[in-house]
Image (cartoon, rainbow, N blue to C red; front, side, top):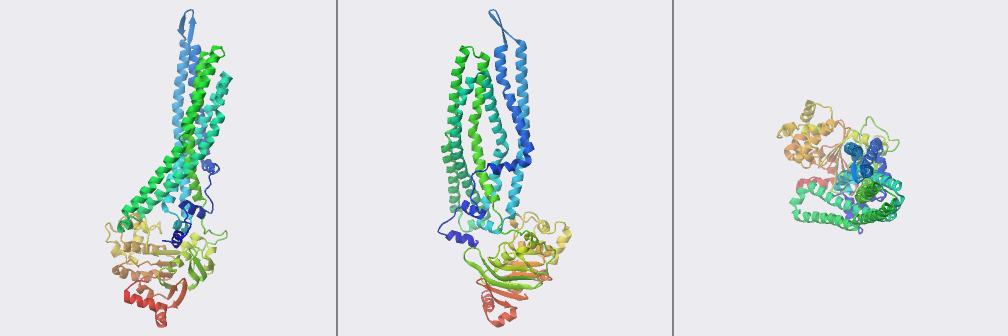
Length: 612
C-alpha cells in the first residue's frame, strides 16, 4: 500500500473519499452545473436545434385536436326546424384534420427519437472520450489515493445519467413550455378570465418547484456518492478476490458490501420520502385549476360569452396547460440526478496532473544515458523517503541498487520516470533536468520491467506488438529467440498465439516477466530499469534469461533494483541505499573488501538465501 494512504489511515481526522477527491482537485464540488453542461452540447447544437424544431412541430399537431372538437360542436350540426342534421362537409374536414395530425405526430415522433439518439451518441461518446483521455494524463499519485471503482463510476454510470439531462431534457422542457404558453394564449383568445383563473396557480407552483429542486439535488447527490462507494468496493473485490479467499475474508467482505448497498438503498428511500409530496401537490394544483375553469366557463356559457364548442375546446387547453405541470416532477428529478452526477464528473475533470510539462519543455531525439541525482529529498507524506540522495550513473553503465525493503530503492525509479517530483534537489539525464524534458518523450527513452508486470488481453504476440505496432510475427519471434525465451513461451498451450488473459492471468508470473523482458528488448531503450524484475522467476527460468539480460544491458544504461545476486555481482557499480541515502558505492569486489553495509547484505543472502 502507498505510504500516503497508510498515513491518511492513521490521521486523527479521516477524510471521506469525496473529500480526498476534492483535495486532489484543489477545489470543492460545485453545485451549480448549468454553465458547465451547456458547452457539452455545443458540438451538436445543429442536432439540438433540429430536435427543438421537431418538438415545436409535434406540439402544434397536439393543438389540432381541441380545434377539431370545437369545430365539430360548432359547425358539425345543422339545425333545420326541429331537426338536427349532420354537416358532412364539416365532419369530413374535421376527420381529415384529425387524421393528418396523428400522421404528422407519429412522423415527428419517430424523427425526434432518431435525432435524440444521434445526439445522445455523439454527446455521451465525446464526454466518455474526454474523461478517458483525462484519466490517462493524471499523475500516478492520484491513483494511489483514489479508488478505481470511483473513477469507473464517473466514466460509466454517471455519464449515462447525464444523457436524459443533456439530450432529452431540453426538447422535453421546450415541449412543456410551448404547451403551457400556447394553451395560455389560446385561452386568453377564447375568454380572458380562463387565462387569469389558471395564471393564479403559477406563482405558487414556481415557489414550491424551487424548494423541490433544492431538496432533489441534495437527494441525488447523496445517491450518487453512495453508488460510487459500493461500485468502488466491487472493483476492489474483483481485483483482490484471490487474497480475499486466501485470507478467509469472504464473509466479512460480503457483509461490508451488503452494508454499502443498504446505505445506497436508504439514500434513495429517504430522498424519495422528502420529495414524494411534489407530484400530489402538482396534481392538487391541477385539480384546483380545472375546477376554477369549469366554474368560470359554466358562467360564461350561460351568459353567452362563449359557445359550447369553445367551452369544450377550453377544457382541452386546460389539460394541455396542466399536463406539463405533472411532468415537472420527472423533469426536475432527472435534472437533479444528472447534475449530481455532473458535479462528480467535473470534479474529476477539474483535477489537474501535479506534474505538467513546462511551456518550453524540450523533445530529445536521442539521449546518451547519463543519469545524475543531485541532493534529492522526497517524501510521499511527512516522512522522508529519500534524504539528500546524490547518485551518478554513466552512460552505458549497469548499476545495481540494493538495500533493505522500504528504504527508497523503488522510489528512485518513480522519480527517474517522473511519476513523482522531488521536493528538493534535481534529477538530470545528460545535461537536461527532467523538468525540462517532455514527459512522454522522456519515457520513450526508457523501458521498465517490474516485479508485478501487467499484460493486456490478447495473445503473446499482441502484447509484444504494443511497442512495435508494425512488426511482423517473424520479427517478434526472432526477438523472443534472441532473449532465449522461446523454449518456455513455445510450451504454452497455443504457443505464441496463446491468450494471456486479463492482466496476464492465464500465465505464471515468470512467463509474464519473460514477455515483459522481450517487450523491453523490442522497445530498444537507451535506459533500461529492472525493478525486482526476476524476483519471482524460478531457477530454471532465471538461468535461461541471464545470458539474455547481459545482451539486453549491452550499449545502454541499466539500473537493476535488488534482484538475484548473480546479476548484481556482474554490475559495473553497486549502490547501497539505506534510510533514503546512498551509503556505499563500488563494485562487488570492492564493497566486499570494505566489509560494510553491502558485506552484511551479502552474508545475509548467503546464510538465508534471501533476495535483496
